[in-house]
Amino acid sequence: MENHRGVIAEDYHVLQSLGSIDAARAAMVAGPGTDEALLIGLYQSVEIGLHNLVQLLDRAAVHLRDGEVAAAATELHWVRGFHRVLVRLSLAARRVSGGWDAEVPRWTVDGTPAFAEFRGALGRFDRELTALADRPEVDLGAVIAHRSLDDAWFGVLHCARIANHDARVWSANLSASAHPAPEQPPDRVLVSDSIRHAVFEHQLRGDTYFTQFRALHQIPELLIREINDRVEIAIRRIRTGEIVAAVDALDGAGELFDPIEACLPPLVDNLSTRDYHQIRENLGLTSGSHSVSIRFELFTELYEQLIDAIRQYGDAGGADPLARRLHRNVRDLQVFIFSWRDMHLHLPRNNLGGMETKSLTGARDAVGTVRKMRDNAASNDPLARVDKRLPVPTSLAGPLVEYLDGPESSDGLLLSVTGKVTQANFRDVQERTNFFAQPCPFSRPQRRVV
Ligand code: HEM
Image 1 (cartoon, helix red, strand yellow):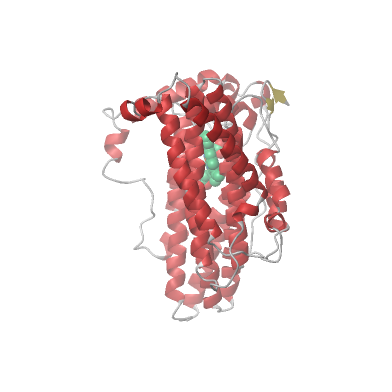
Image 2: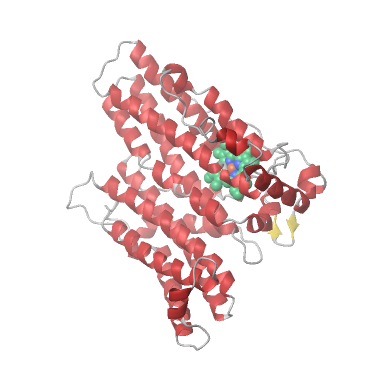
């Protein structure tokens, strides 16, 4: 099924090219749960980010050449967002590398296929920008001196200078991080063909942010696969009393929380309601709630089994001095899961809105459904059941809730305006007609039982 932009996704797995993400992991030169796999996951994620920067920078260069400065400014905002993700990935790589000998060779980030393409795109963009500086129609000094965030030229220059410095930072961090397989060429270490295929497999016509929307799902999907394998290892080790190994597996998993969390702000900050609406129909009857690895495995099944394994270890009299560390690990996981949920709520709020706006999958009130998913998870939280002292970290309660939900706040107004716009743009989604009359084909996956 197609619309004027291209294919309408069959399901979430196809939409996000998760087959290629799985292939990239399956062909890794290191086994899951190793320090090498942590680094490879981070470097593969960098590769996804770099391919996206190539597309964005090339589009921005064309827009600058054509005098479409506002369009270039929007692209540069996304560029800045992806550089921020790369910085966070590179910091995680540095932390992970801290445990390696100083003699271990360093990562050859400048030898990867995506880096070479990025370097070319950066040069093309810079040539366009510097050529403009020589022309009379724009006075860069005047832009910097007198204009601010309301101005497209200022947006271009401001984001470009931030991106330049961030590029200096992440590239320095990555080239100082450990090489996970010095005897192998970078494209083999990264399984670059699969990563590239994942990024570019599905394209839509026109200048949309579809590739970036997919990338900011793909990086978390990729990294959460490593977290899940590590949580599974930890559960097995706790059951056999190998607490040092369990803590090690969970410490490694924890290194990935920060870069995953870092993938939400670029979407939250840069995806406008209009830009999301341009691609919405092509997402078909899908939702991130169909993510097997995120929603079902990590947020539910592995999280519960990990807590259960720790409880059983304690009940059986297990008293390894490192057991306290396990409690810390599981609390960190809880904070990660719930803070991710709170940050993710921005997306249905901004892009779908209130007034019982239906989600693509047919949930009657999209924002209400996402809130309910969070609230149900909070009230059934297995960690809170075991340790009653720990309140679940959500924004459910707090000193501003009453005001923000009340008539004086602008929040309700903005949600309802957004909802009305979404419903008017997507009658088929709202009224479940034509393509959206079909029942959602997704069914609950098999439980990941350790
Ligand atoms: C514009 C961007 C997004 C919108 C509008 C959006 C919207 C939604 C909606 C409406 C739901 C619940 C209702 C339903 O499934 O139909 C949901 C759930 C979910 N989404 Fe998103 N989403 C966005 C981006 C993302 C991203 C980037 C990810 C992950 C990489 C993601 C992962 C999830 C997960 C895991 C759930 C289940 C939540 C839970 O278990 O609490 N979503 N999303």
